[in-house]
Length: 332
Length: 275
Image 1 (cartoon, rainbow over the protein chains, first blue to last red):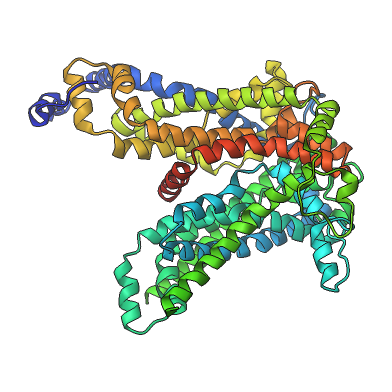
Image 2: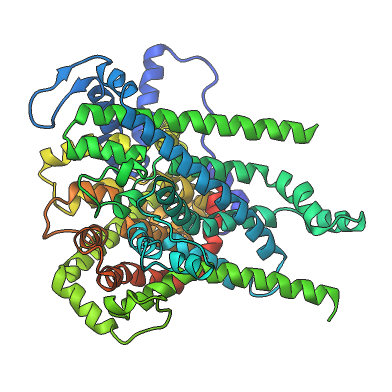
């Protein structure tokens, strides 16, 4: 490694010569600009692999999928331009609207408990003095497990005849619930799986935010006679607002794209997989997958994908506005 | 006991309960994987380990090519991680420490990539793979994953604060070129950041499902997640079999995570907050 010596003297030498102050003729300016670009060839070389891969597998596909959404294509034959026909069909497609409703319901049923429990969990871990590293690691474990494996396990957990959940209900004298075949049961299973996987992750993020809150604030509140619950709502929640906003946005983006859970849970039921019986577990992205890769309707699939994108943007904006307004109200 | 002591006890009781809920499904996974399916079908359900783990593993081996899938998954996860670490740290180093024409524009484009949802590019990516002849090939998973915008963004933040400018200036005086500065100065300093990004990338690649499900059409060449999902579709009611398969998909990753755990959790929150 190179020694770092006399930083001031050396820094002076490296400083780039100040730019010429008098205006250059246009041609000379262009030439100097080209030379500046040429001088930085190692920098361009360093970032070019990323941008090349991105152009080919990231940007080009997105542009192509916009093009596809205005065409009819089965993936093999020729494409036909149909204008807005795919979107018109989508607006009249009851299954699409059902998938939108299902997605929103599952999103609400998972995000609200996930973030609420995570916030409480984070402030509990934050106030614990011992074992904090252990708690952090342990609650983070669900987030690294594979969704496929856990969807299979949750399918067993909620199985009608042999699952633990129904056994528990039975021992409490309650009846069995058909979790995997009733419209609400399916949503509960998916939402509880998402909640289990993401609560610890969000708690860890909140913890980082909590550690930035000065402890003096809590001590001052205690002196003023505020209990732990009062300081949670008067100090913790308002000061964590930016972090909460971040987690809400992330949960919205991922929640609107729920796919793997229903795809794995209901794939063994009657094919093709359209979210189980009565399409109770049909999410938007599962419907996209079904129309595109089961039915080979690539144009229609692209139209669904763009609609999902639109829904994501709309909901991120709504959540943003709601939280920002809350912030202004709290600031007053 | 003092009031404070009671409160502390209560706090830890709640936290231990949270830990129990976090790990209970994994415990139950082991219970199911070590019992026979008929033992699982008992009422009330079993909650203790059985002695059939080895025979269940054998049944998984006999039913699907789990070793092949495991090898494929390791290949994909290792190659993706290596590519991402190299390309992302190099690009992040460039964005963090060098001024060059178009830098802000290019970095802005990179941030815009975050916004694009995956499913928008799934169909065209599949079409591209058809043209490249990569459908069913592991390259179809590895190459697109190399463009990891999150990695560059996170790494740039990390390098900005971890690598001192003075050190780079000194190296420049001593005649170090750009790539030499990256290799001899930046790389040794950012090793902890690389470790975090590496584990993170490895976990995501290991668990990836949607894209492999679409592009791996060859039944002899699947990743763990895809072959596990297929096993579940065909043998859905044979719990001990499918859950043992799930165990194989979860356990190695869990071991990797626990090995680096404390450090991963600490760095994850820094990156998450900055991101």
